[in-house]
Length: 258
Image (cartoon, rainbow, N blue to C red; front, side, top):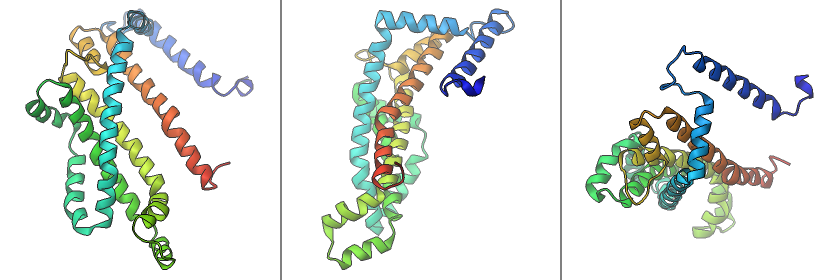
């Protein structure tokens, strides 16, 4: 029977059965409902927050900060990564610094942002930019360095140099790696933003991270799990709407996919 069902139905049935087991286990009293709320309670919170507008407002604030910080980080990271790849002394200085800063957890930028900018919107954006920038720099650097030297020599033999060499040879060859770096930078931007919103509560913008922290302080585990689910869903939608179509186009343009 399972083979006759459409493909999306099978994982849906598995998920529903797991949720049903979780619901029964919580309601049986074997675990604390405060720490492990039943799925129905999480859905109730989600529906109430959606009707009150609280969830949509928090999601809008978070997405605005995320897109702005990611755009700034990517706009700075792509040229810096290319520069690191093509200039040896820049790679030995800024490239090594980027590698060290990339290993730094995003939450470490929060105290510095608070000291420099105070409890303002700029503090949150700074943390997001720092979380995005170094991941993009390293990804672009490695992508450009991995372009086969034969491509460069062939293009230079035919008279290509300067901006023409970059735009027609290096960047197209490095594009798959650059796109992977963008996806990695997007993931790091999400993590940085959640850390910033949890620790920096700005009265002008109550984001998903602040909503998550409020649920922790109020012992509302249904709210905590609901916000976590929203973050995961938004991340998946961003990948399906933005990154996946670009990857599919890139594979089709290179004959890797019909």
